[in-house]
Amino acid sequence: MLTLERAKELNDKEVTEHHLIIHAKNVMYAMGAMADHFGADREHWMAVGYLHDYDYEKYPDEHLLHTEKELLAEGVDECDVRAILSHGYGHCTDIEPISDMEKSLYTVDELTGIIQACARMRPNGISDLEVKSFMKKFKDRKFAAKCDRDLIIRGCEMLGMDVSTVAEICIEGMKPYAADIELLGTGA
Image 1 (cartoon, rainbow, N blue to C red):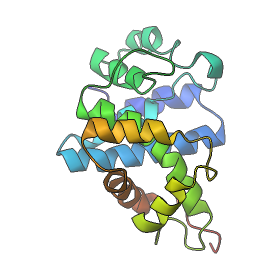
Image 2 (image 1 turned 90 degrees about the vertical axis):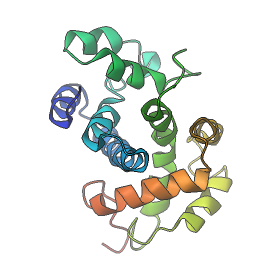
Image 3 (image 1 turned 180 degrees about the horizontal axis):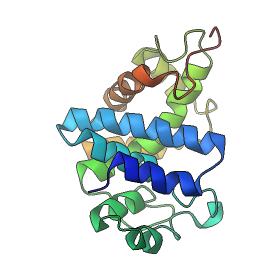
Image 4 (image 1 turned 90 degrees about the horizontal axis):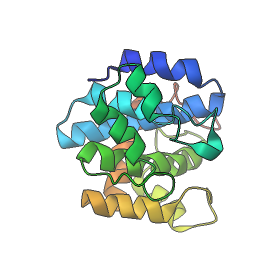
């Protein structure tokens, strides 16, 4: 099973761009919160979340095509590699998310982008971001327009959950790490 220490060791060799590291951390903390929700292994889910964009910096146009062989060679478990590959379902892989971990990763990858954008606009950052404010921004497709809302909705449907419920879990899971993910706010 992938540990957080090993995920960081692998990812940090490949990912150097600051915004990609922040994204990896956002997804990692959101995945920890989703693991808590499902009563799963928090550190394991966080490790998979941190490593999910392993090949993106080097191969943005071939994302996830340089992940499977490479991570298996590094000793990463097949199930964890499958989970990472499944987050590209429908746009760069045909591996459908099946487990709760896979469905969560598929969903929170895009969802955390909108959460981050919302929090960055606020004086207190993520610390007082409520799901009601998030949902207003979520419904405005011009806001954080590159984040695929239809994918988020599909992911939430796979999970059998509302977007607002998943968003609340992720926001609350990310709040304790506001400094680490640079979401302390415009007033900080």
